[in-house]
Length: 128
Image 1: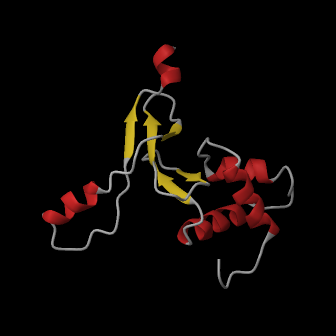
Image 2 (image 1 turned 135 degrees about the vertical axis):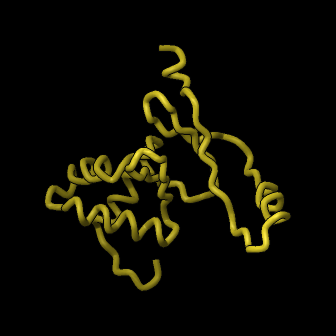
């Protein structure tokens, strides 16, 4: 992040997000970062999550439930949202870049990418 001063708290947020596959909310990130940085505020966590997402270092996922989720893997990939438990899971599938071409064919603007969020019932809820 060029031009942004290093912050141990920001690095702790990145480290936590890279250590989990759970796609936590800001509140969950806050709870976990406070283990090592007990004086960090929720506002600081929110500001840093937004900065990191805006800079492309992490992903912000809007799942339609009113709270954003965050992903330490900023590389293009797809997610699944369980309609039952709300869990967000990475899907191991090849990128579908042809969607951009299909969308651009009937659109006068410029397609710069896409976001796909699959939904349904996760394996854990399906067996419960």
